[in-house]
Amino acid sequence: MLVNWVGVILGWPVRGWGGRVGRVRMVVRVGVGVLAAALLGGAVWLAWVVTAQRMGAAMGLGPADGVVVVERCYEVSDGEGNSDGTDCQGRFTPAGAGGDQARPIVVRGATGKHRAGTRLPVRLAQGVAHEPSSSPAVKYGVVAGMILVAGAVPAGWLLTAAWRGRALEGTVLFGAVFAGLTAVAVLGIAVGLFAGIVEVFL
Image 1 (cartoon, helix red, strand yellow):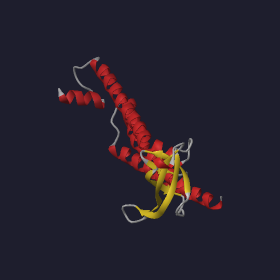
Image 2 (cartoon, one colour; image 1 turned 135 degrees about the vertical axis):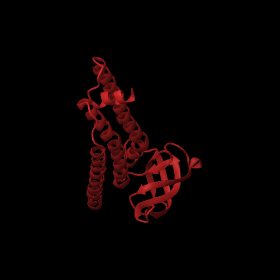
Image 3 (tube, helix red, strand yellow; image 1 turned 90 degrees about the vertical axis):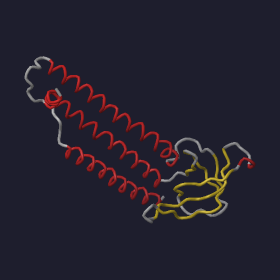
């Protein structure tokens, strides 16, 4: 019985199944389509939850949530010891609030090492302050792109297999995912360099 089901799914001729083959294949195709839609929808949802609010804050979208009075700024590094931009510590006062409501906060991806006492209009995202800066915006955009590629490519692979009525080689899937992630990374680097050059001259 198991061999018969596998044969139906892969398109092999199975003796004694008659018209049931077409119905089973249709059910399989519908199931694969639902799985592909779930993968794509999950990727979009995850990209939105992880990056949308942070990227919007880094891009300066919407009114400022308040002002940060800088106390000190410092260089930060990633897990491999490479420079990962500048962060600033300071006191955050919500928009329209008094100084007695100020609280400590960190400004991620600052545009530079601001002097102590500098007032920065910021936007909040998940408890972290951001001033408008291209570097973190591009970084979050790359993360969102990679999440979408990781969901969209397998979804497309499944839909293609269902449409053709046969399973595709796994190497096609892995090759497409690798190519998509590489393209997103290269595009992010190019956009980041261009944005950095523009910021220097503006």
